[in-house]
Structure formats: structure tokens, C-alpha cells
Image: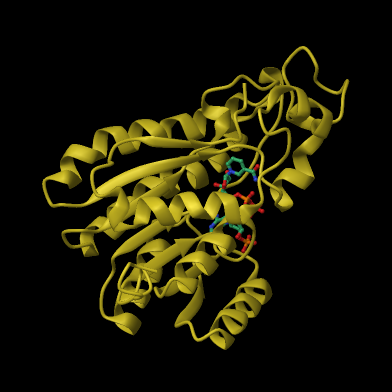
Length: 261
Ligand SMILES: NC(=O)c1ccc[n+]([C@@H]2O[C@H](COP(=O)([O-])OP(=O)(O)OC[C@H]3O[C@@H](n4cnc5c(N)ncnc54)[C@H](OP(=O)(O)O)[C@@H]3O)[C@@H](O)[C@H]2O)c1
């Protein structure tokens, strides 16, 4: 709420890619909960997206969902155009869609490389491009990096580098978009309790510890807060960057990692 009691995102329209589950679903819920009309994109999770839409609608939110695989920039553009057609404008892009990858250097194939970069890197670049075409002054773009972009994890090079590129993207797009009054930043989440973390928990380790201790124990040692984030705690960061409170922040990556050293 603002000091006047109006929800912070009342009158704003947001697109959330990868909004059917995990961090993206929490971002969609947070923005909608604070008054934004939200268009959720998903790749395969139609049922989950529809359930989220139904739940948020019962809370009075304006929410729509559509299949939009960010591997195809035309589908991302279609999602953004759907939001504009339904709600009349675009104010916020939260680019949350992403995929994990772990493997040692000798096992990574060109097809693996293309698959991971096509979603995590190329997908986010063209999401920013298509959103920028519709955003006006005051518009906000929030992309998704990872703690992995700046901490070495065993056999994680492909994913980590696909996310590091996103931090460079926001840095370099900031002046281009700043000239139009639009900000662009990234969030670098640490380990967050989602399907992705559950599926790959055993692999997230310091190179010298890989496979030797459970991730929860490793986080207790290496994370200042000693636990995974709840997706809602990460969504709070997207909401901050999407809000007027972040009007002087652009080109930066916000580390939301519970103090991961
Ligand atoms: N969880 C963590 O610990 C962590 C840490 C750092 C960064 N991140 C990043 O945070 C973001 C969200 O992660 P998460 O943990 O919430 O992942 P998740 O639980 O695996 O959920 C991934 C979401 O992205 C969507 N998605 C995947 N590929 C897509 C594509 N090609 N096009 C459109 N949507 C696609 C999925 O949609 P469908 O279900 O429809 O396929 C789903 O909604 C990702 O960018 C991830 O890299 C996560």
C-alpha cells in the first residue's frame, strides 16, 4: 500500500514469464496482490497457470494466462501483445522463465548449450526487447540471473554463464532504456524452495564438497541465514524493482541470496 492506502501497483499492468510455478508464480501473486493486472506466461504448466489465475481472481485480481515459450521470441511477443490488448498498456516485465543444467565440461553438447542459452539468455534478451517496445516512461524490466553467476558451483558452468550474461545485459541496456525513462535490473536469487531447487538440490555444492554433504547442511555452513529462500521472499525483490521505490536503480543486479558466501 502507498501512504494514501492505494495498492502500490494499482493501475499497472505486468507480464510475468515463467509464471506458472516457483518464483514466477510468487511474483505474479505479489504483483496482483498489490493491485497490478497480470498476464502470466508458461511453457507446459497450463493446469498450474489456470489454477493460479483462478486463485488470484478469487482475491479480486485481474489475471490472465497464456502459453508462451520464451525459446520462441514470437511467443513472448504474443504474450506481451495479449496483455496490452486485454489491459490496455504495459508497465512491468518480470522475466522469470528459466531452466537448470548441471554437467561436467566433457559431457556438455552443443545441443545442451543451445537449449540452456535459448531459454535463459536469448529468451530474456528478446523478452526485454519486446517489452521495451511497449513500455512507456516509468516502465520497469526485471530479468532473472542467479547466485550461480558469481559463485563457483561444481559442473554448473553452462547454467551459470547463461545467467552471468543476463547481468551484463541489464548493465548495458540501462543507458539505452534510461533515455526513455525505463529501468532494467536483474535479481540474482540464491537457493529458493521451488521445483527447480528440489530437483537439483544434490548438485548445488562447492566443487570440493560435491556429493559429500546434503545441500541443507551446506547452506547452513555457507549461507548467513542457513536456509533456502521462500519464493515469496524473492518475489519481494521483484516487487521492489518494479515499484516507484526503485526509481533511481537501473543496470544493476540485486543479490537475494540469504548471504551466500
Ligand atoms: N530456485 C532457485 O534456487 C533459483 C536460484 C537462482 C535462480 N533461479 C532462477 O529463477 C527463475 C525461476 O526458477 P524456479 O526455481 O521458480 O524454477 P521452476 O520451479 O523450475 O519453475 C520454472 C518456471 O519457468 C517456466 N519455464 C521454463 N522454461 C520455460 C520456457 N521455455 N518458456 C516459458 N516458461 C518456461 C516453467 O513453466 P512450465 O511449468 O509451464 O514449464 C515454470 O513456470 C529461473 O530463471 C531460475 O533460473 C532459481
